[in-house]
Image 1: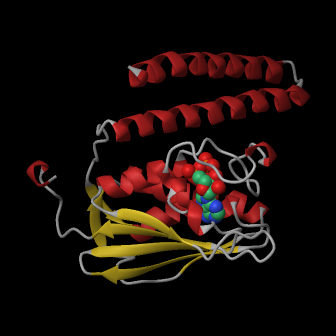
Image 2 (image 1 turned 60 degrees about the horizontal axis):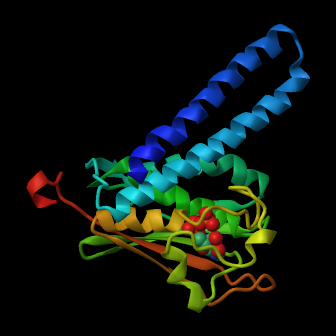
Length: 245
Ligand code: ADP
């Protein structure tokens, strides 16, 4: 029921808002009142944010009800990472965070999985790595081929995570620290979010038959011990048949 309501009743008003704002933009441009575009852009970025949150809530609901269906296709990890890094490049540049991909066995090989969902998984992890790393930090993406799996690691030198919290962050709606002090931004240092990114990432990894976990010596905003998120992805020889899944 939630899925049906969220997908329709929550998204329709957003479509209305976007539609009316684009009409407003037309009028503003025709009347050459471009200073008003700051306000229309504000409305559009708010509605985009809301749409992302609704979509995350729908994804969590799909995962919890075992309704997430993967669309298996050939994929190459390097292309998935390139795509995510291109999307993140404006933010990482603005925050002066260097992101480096180190070559590893399997990075350029063909594999089979749901590329769109894998992009979503890595986007969530890389956005978090940016968010929880101070300006001027660095993120390294490296990997290791294991028997039947690739272990992709996203290593940041940010605030780190207390060992006591390392399981809880994968539960839905779990954020650490004083939420009231978080800025409401997807990209700013310690920007707040609804706490759905990691549960979705875990759901996508597990739906592929993989797993996800974090290693960090602890949390400190003085020493910045950093975190390493591991994503274990199965290596498949061919496109799985429906009966294999
Ligand atoms: P959101 O980003 O919406 O807050 P997530 O589920 O993606 O939610 O993350 C949950 C929490 O885990 C974050 O609020 C943060 O406290 C912690 N976290 C996630 N990634 C990192 C990271 N790379 N470094 C430090 N803390 C992190």
